[in-house]
Length: 130
Image 1: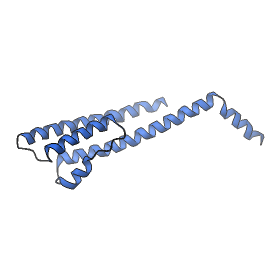
Image 2 (image 1 turned 180 degrees about the vertical axis):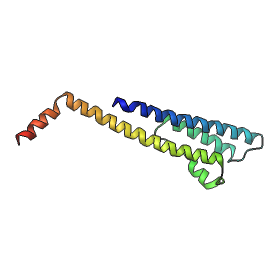
Image 3 (image 1 turned 30 degrees about the vertical axis):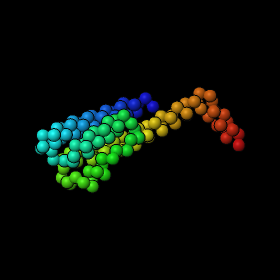
Image 4 (image 1 turned 90 degrees about the horizontal axis):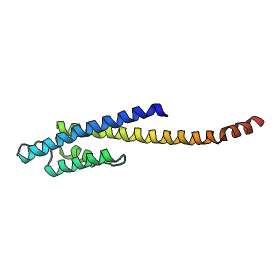
């Protein structure tokens, strides 16, 4: 399954690239809040969102808390809120693709082991006799 590895790497790179962009936006908004010019959320919310994104990058299983906070308390036309929610959608696809890749890679590995030890030949000879 070597041909799938570049695609997998590409999805990972795209997610991480988008996550880094959003993290920079969060840092910018935190700085704006400290200057009294912030528009979205609170400093503690933004810092927690930043930590969530770091955990999303590190882990394939982290479930971030920020989508609900944004949907419940932020104005609907917030550009940063839209970027955060879009990142969450990309992350969900990233997780699904990673799990599917891991499953098929594991299945391929098992099939290769069966083939290596001749299990398929043994099974086919049993069925051809019947």
